[in-house]
Structure formats: structure tokens, C-alpha cells
Length: 337
Image (tube, rainbow, N blue to C red; front, side, top):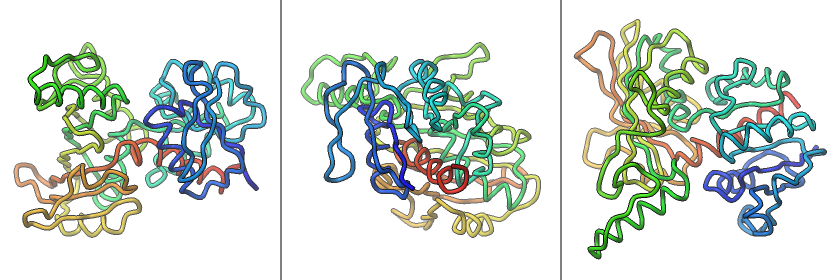
């Protein structure tokens, strides 16, 4: 049986990646519809290598007859249109932050908690987690199964593509301006991003954490285990695609680096590239376009009891967004449709 699939936010970075990923994967899509704002309506987007789709106006679109909606238009837009699509009979897989902490909406990473998809019928919506959370929990799951995790300390190094096309454009234009000695203008980010780091992603909260850091904390608990303690520092870096994370993990039981390495090698969606030599690790440039989450620099942390440290890298537009959503659709189509 083939499905009618609508991609909401089809002209954005994640929407375009959703269309590409959908064309590559196993969801039986007989018809694909590209939806975006009125401003983008009438334009065209690529679907796979050879097909081109005309963009339709989301505000005027009737979702009747649509089976699956892959949605990444921004939280406010999803808040308005995702319930309408679900009410019309579609399962909505939403990439925005709006529904993630709704207790009646499953928050899913297929390698970690695919069973949670069973709760989709309550509201007809399944939430895609934050990009940084996704790549982290894919790595934490096999380790948590191996030796219960007590605490995670994570520092992220997040690419500008996480801030959309505007973020990528700003890094490009600022870099060019510096090379030709033009004034550096900032519009998307709070400080210069070219040749710089910004320890600030999303808005600040009253406790001093940013909203991005809060997302990683609460989403990890919802997806994996509410007993795990998490603290995060999220940093924007001058990289176009690919998020990196330095993870420090404290376990209840002793676990060696070798046992952790073996568990990660056997885990779905994980690639271990960990050689203690020059170039024996993975960087963001090398994971662009890749589906897996890559782990390097696995080592025991002798400053705490039962601790490990490691380096985790993934393409935030693929596994951190589009691929995860399409994988959810694949599980739903196979087991819950």
C-alpha cells in the first residue's frame, strides 16, 4: 500500500533534506506534496535526484486524504497546522519544539524508543526531538543498557545550519567580509559567528540555562530514563553542517572503555571510529550527508568513579532532523498504520 505524504516547510533546510531522505528510503510514498508559506508557493523543490515538486500554500491546503505529514515549519506554524492535519486523518511527525514535552505526544528516536510510537493515536502527532538530543541518546541507549547511566555532562558544538538558511548565510557573508576587510554585520546571531564561538543557543531561562540546554535535559529524560541527571552547555560554532558533542558519562556500575566501544559498535545507527592516532577520529566535515551517529575518543574518566568520556558527531540535518522523522514514518507504516 502506498501513502500520500505531505512535507510542511519544504523550502527550508530541513524540509529539503526531508524530501531527499524520503526519496532515498523505504516509506512507500505514492504521492508527495510540498507545502510552505504563501511567499514560497508556486516555486519548485527537488524530490530525489530527478523529480521536481511544485510548492503549495500551506494556509490554503486541505489535508484530507494525506496519510503522513513530515513537518518542519517552525513551532508557531506547527501549533496551528499539525492538529488540523491530524484531525483530517494524517499522522503528523513534527520536527519543531512545540509538541515535544506534551505528555500525550510520543517523543521518538527509532533506535532508542520505537515502542513509544504506539501512543500516536491520542493526538495523531509524533514529535521529533531536538537535533542535539537525538545524536546523544542514540549513543546513550546502548551504554545505559550496558551499565546504568547516573549522570551526563555534555558540551555541544553546533553548526550554523541548526539556525536555518539565515545562519548559514551569515557565516558565509561574515567570513567573506573579514577576508576582504568589509564591516562584519550580525543579523541572525547575537555575536559574530565567523572565526568565533557563541555559548548561547535559543533564549535564556530564569535559571541561567538556555532553552536549547533545557531541551537536551528534559528530552533525554522523556526518551530514555527520567532518572538520568543531565547538564548541558550548548555552543554555536562556525561550521556549516554537523553537530559535535563532548560527552562525559557517569555510570552506576563500572564499565571499561573497551566494553563501551563494543556495545556502541553493535548498536543500530552508530559508527565507531576510534583510533588513538592522528586523524583517528571523526569531525563534522566528514559526517555531512551521513546517516549514522559517529563516536570517537572513547576513554575512561579517572576523575570520577565509573566514568567515560567520548566525542560524538552527526549531520544535524540528516539524523538530527530529516532522517529521524522519516525513520519514524517507516516504523509507523510497518507496525502502526
